[in-house]
Amino acid sequence: MAKRFKAAIIGGSGYGGAEMARRLLMHPDVELVRVASIDHVGEPMGAVHPNLDGATELRFEDLPPAEAARGCDVALLALPHKVTAAKVPELIAAGVKIVDMSGDFRLRDAAVYEKFYGAKHPHPDLLASTFVYGLPELNREKIKAAKYVASPGCFATTIELGLLPLARAGLLDGATVHVTGITGSSGSGIAPSAGTHHPSRAGNLKTYKPLEHQHVPEIVQTLGDAGARDVQLRFVPVSAPLTRGIFATCFLELSADVDAARLATLFDETYIREPFVRRPKKRLPEVVAVAGSNYVEVGFAVGPAVAGKRTVTCFSAIDNLIKGGAGQAIQNMNLVLGCDERASLEDVGNWP
Picture 1 (cartoon, rainbow, N blue to C red):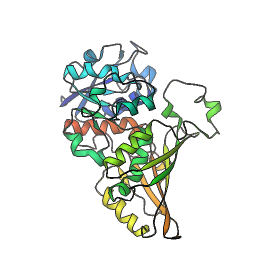
Picture 2 (spheres, rainbow, N blue to C red):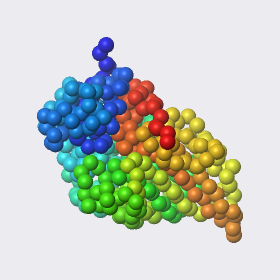
Picture 3 (cartoon, rainbow, N blue to C red):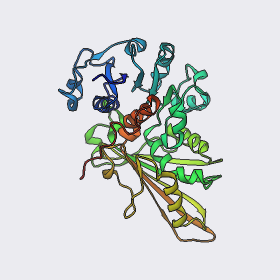
Picture 4 (cartoon, rainbow, N blue to C red):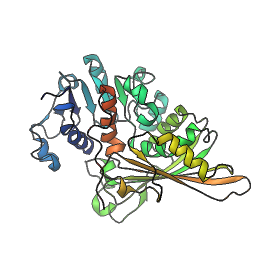
């Protein structure tokens, strides 16, 4: 039986491309018809992504964007930052819907993009209104109506979902939030480097880009869209000896009248109808509970009231490659195409 929609992946040789392909190959409504890449041209997907061996006969093809998307309803982009920006106008001209996993169209301010990504944006005219920011828990209705979606970054997704209930309630207005985000090695991509090489990563913890990570303005922009005025973010990312997963801890000082009962109400009101966000009631979030899945865990802890203030700590955990990357891109694709939002994403992760 023919499927309703056709999709192409552009940039399919990396970890994100592999996860998108895996999800599309089991999708009930969307057929993966083409995978473009400048690497491994002519090779079968299973030769590069061993988990796909025998699952598809598709091979990597070196194609211009418009040719890669020919006859497709949607193009899923898994290209590096700064590469995507140059490719998108051709896809827009081709009339195909786009879900982009890079950071090239998440920010609305070209000057901020240049500061954090180290290059002038080649098409700043596309930033302000062309792409919808693809966080379904905040922008679901906008995504449904969109042709072009910029999926959030992995750290951004984790931190935004940990803080979204507070932003919506006005509790982040004027606040300074201190964040530590611990991430697995797959977030660094498939190409090895000295910093991601196994002997230097295993058994090690180290920070990188402290207080200047490129997801900071994305998070501040998104929390502002959720209602937070003048929020400041102090973010320190940490590389951990994990393959998959991100764990974020967000610290802030709030009024003493913000107690555990009020926070529980805010979190439950925000996420009670969200298919992929859960708040464990008898434990706090942990990576192993969501790794391998599109699910998110959120939670919080509150300190004692001291001098009219109380320390609140929000926790969140995701799989960086799925809800932090390819899975959220598929979730956005489902919304854009009018499919069941949960299609090909409802499987839970492994335990232990």
